Length: 150
Image 1: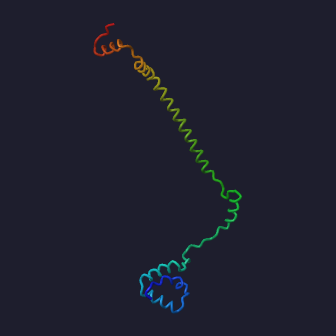
Image 2: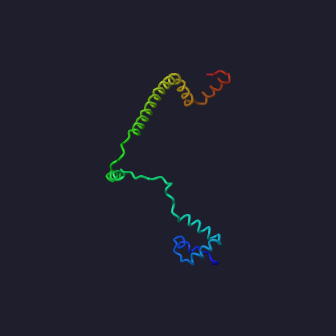
Image 3: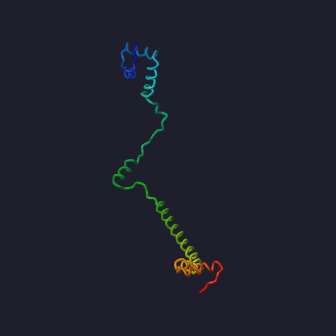
């Protein structure tokens, strides 16, 4: 056989070939490396797997009841209050932190406002209440060391 015997693989693996064809395919497989590789790969895929090494699975005896409860809309597992408590605790903690922040912040603001309120008003007054050119001239002449002529 000069041609590859790939087309006979299915019949060869299932042992459906007549003796003459089976002998020719076996002889060709001994000589042709391409067909040997093809047959080895497919034989490895099609041979039954030894499942004795696989872990045994046991069915859940309560599976039908769980499915029925899911269909009916009932929840099979008990509800846990841990997420509710976690969110409640986080909310209380944030509230307490804000309350402490407001209390401390108002105390700081009162002390600072008493000290700097008059200074801030004077600075704003000076910045926004500019007089005419005469007052500006007087201001610069005082800065230069001159005296006010008025």
